[in-house]
Image (tube, rainbow, N blue to C red; front, side):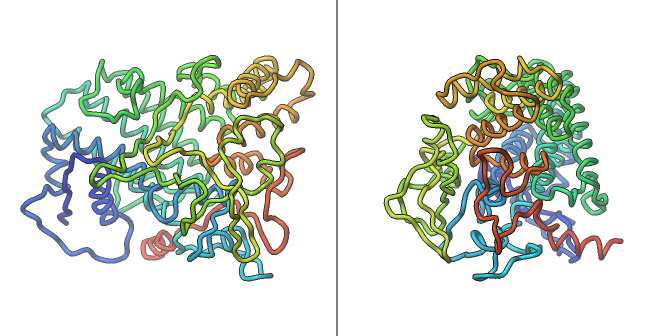
Length: 471
């Protein structure tokens, strides 16, 4: 099978070309006709004999492909934000955003099971393509004669980190459904594994990537975007890798491992809260896109992202992070749901989107320290966030009595520091607090009947069909 792969310098067009390639290579029970294009490279020729220009294009494509799960009609942060009741997407032409995803059908009926073929599962395919793009780049580099062994290790470390990040996004969506982790042969993908097994695999892949990066020399043999400023060498990219490992360890409740990973990351209690790799957007560049989460203040878009009022009413007085939302001049009401506040996290279409940043790492440190008995250290991390991100007074020693109160406070700080960034639903789920009252003074909107909270999206219909056709 010959599949077209067209290389472009512009990142989003490159990601789109990879998306076409990877969707053609993904699980399907249908045959794909052979296509030959004399003007563009096939995947076979790239894997067998990649030039430096082709390797560079593959690197750009891998990095840009991570945006596909955000820049689509079911943007990741909007879907998981809805599931965790951070936001309510009041879409004038698609009521499933604010009804079905919140467990309601019509006026009085409750949705028992989400649709396995609905648009809101679309980012599953997009994030799967990230991993596929990474594997193609790694195979191409391994077979290329234009880079040396050290440089190939750099490609391996970069691509394994991205592949792990791809799997983590998929697992966040699927939860207890689990995901496939053995994907080396796209025509014979491995069976689904449990959530715990998937986290183990993701962490192992990050650890392998860390070893690859350690053997990668002083520089990468491919370009990275400005979003990786400060993290664009093997040594500095390792710090990003270890930050992701800390997040995964936290999800595993392996708090000692989280602290170990943090020590090798860019965690800095006194450092810039915004430090960290980012996805970049260039709406004025042809074939690129703008930040999909930006919306014109007080505008009337079809797809309006509103914020439940409890985000404001349950905040501490004077919390600077309330600037992430604003009261609309004219609320929008659809099917009895009114959005009085709107999300204003991103100031423009050119605003970057964090992959992981120091603010999150400080909160990971607080949770890991609290769970390993270092309450003094945990309080110092909590206060770093309260004072520096929130403009709030520091808590005094003894103001939090015991581990449960520490976790309640950390959950609150994560709610406001990481708002609309894809964390709240996962946090509540992993801590078994996905309920109408997850902590004192913290509630979830739209949970009373006929609304319903879901712990996961459904496994996509195409995945089920593949397993039926390939028992």
